[in-house]
Length: 269
Figure 1 (spheres, rainbow, N blue to C red):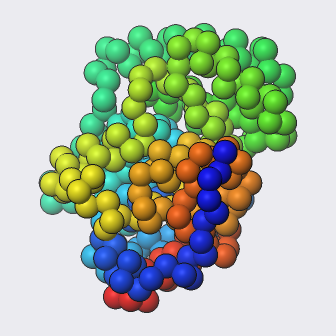
Figure 2 (cartoon, helix red, strand yellow):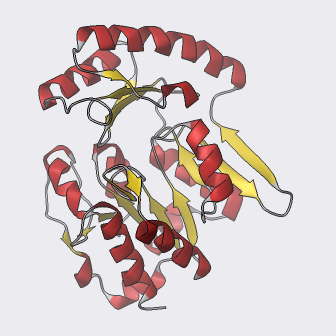
């Protein structure tokens, strides 16, 4: 249960905003609005990077999407499938680097098992479906409960989580999917790895210079760890399911909320 209420982003002190050097952000319903990446949200990424900040989406979306994001978006790297890997495009060498936590053979074996579990969940929870991006995933199972299917009640979402956990999986709820995988990693673990390997940054020592923006329960490890975590306004829909909510909350929802965060950070530059 929520232990305290986030404070309005407008109250974040100027010196706190001025200290931020790294912007981490969820994608679905944080950058996107009603499933679309708006021009304002995309431009916010570009403006932040142009100002010299390190910009990294940290998402539950699949490897296939992250290949595109790392290559073509104004970002420095991307963490995908809730921490299963990170990707980084080296513009000098014109080459995409992919860093998976699990080796190729293990990922192939997992995909076979995940397919069987996914088929069972879809049978046992009417109205659920495999996520449309499942074919582009390397390591996890995504069950759609409100992206391309009519929204399911929370009891059904909880049932999906229980079925995954009964198989020994880690299960996390995003704003559109329930994601499940084998292993105890999460978004925060792989963010630590990325920052150490690509930027020689110790996240634990420098976390006051990071901001993370998110909106849902699968962002909970990031909200709990980063003292300047920000929820876009629609995070209120999930606050009763996030043990430690973000410290700050935007006035606007989704992509407009992310653009509001970018404006707040850039205003003190």
